[in-house]
Amino acid sequence: MDLGNGVITPGHKSAETLEHELASLGLPDLNNKTVLDIGAWDGYFSFAAERLGAKRVVALDHYVWMMDLPKQQAYFRSCLERGEPPKEYETVAGLWQPDALPGKRAFDTAHAALGSSVESVVADFMRMDLDALGQFDVVLLLGVLYHLRDPWSCLSRLRHVTRGTARIETHAVAIAGHPQLRAWEFYPGAELAGDSSNWWGPTVDGLLSACRDVGFSPEPITDVPTPAVGVENYRLVVRCD
Ligand SMILES: C[S@@+](CC[C@H](N)C(=O)[O-])C[C@H]1O[C@@H](n2cnc3c(N)ncnc32)[C@H](O)[C@@H]1O
Image 1: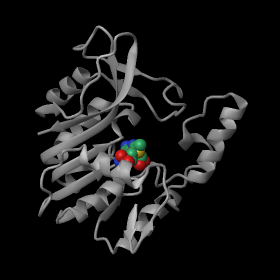
Image 2: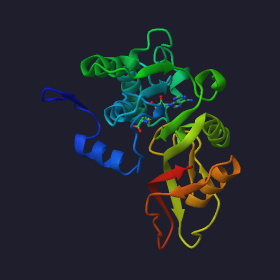
Image 3: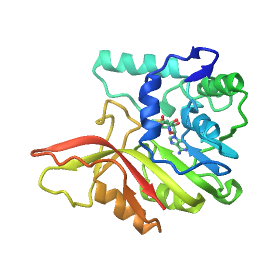
Image 4: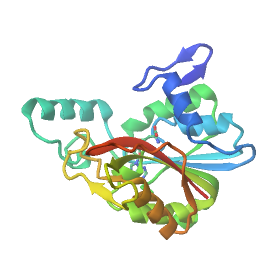
């Protein structure tokens, strides 16, 4: 993240990759818009929305904010070494600290360094009172959907908080020979990328039909692959008006 004055934080993704991801969302003009970033983590997209002129930005998260991430990474590596699938992280003693919010420090550091007015809300989007949260012109659900056990309810709740347009970015699958199949692949345990918090991979029509079902008019923004054989994993962005 570029914090100004030549300070760029190190991270999993380079500044160029994040800029490319931001551009690939096809966001509308954010001037004077209200923006909700569900699953904001370190806040890259929240701070970007503020920089792009949004008048109010809410960064919402709870899961990684409550996690001691160095301990979680150490636990993950020890599972790999032992050849055991990791358990759900919130069930492992010491990783989950809902009061201390150790995983929110990076967000808070960036927030202070940027002199940001982004509001943070610590809440589980799937359980919180959505009427208290309100509605937003633009809602971002980036890298979140496949982490939820009940993605249909998430989409329904997303519709509830979206006054204008939403962007969904998700892990997705394309199945050879079935370009229009409305399917969702289920990943038990830590089957997808060794991560026990990954559950679902929709086909493009699986996701679009679920979005329509909750009242959106969705359009894919990403080019959808058409594999010759097998199943291809990719990242899909959908615009939901
Ligand atoms: C893969 S990260 C994506 C972070 C960021 N949106 C991005 O695209 O770089 C998934 C994020 O969703 C958050 N998350 C998962 N389930 C959530 C829920 N029920 N309510 C709020 N945030 C959630 C996680 O804590 C994590 O920060």
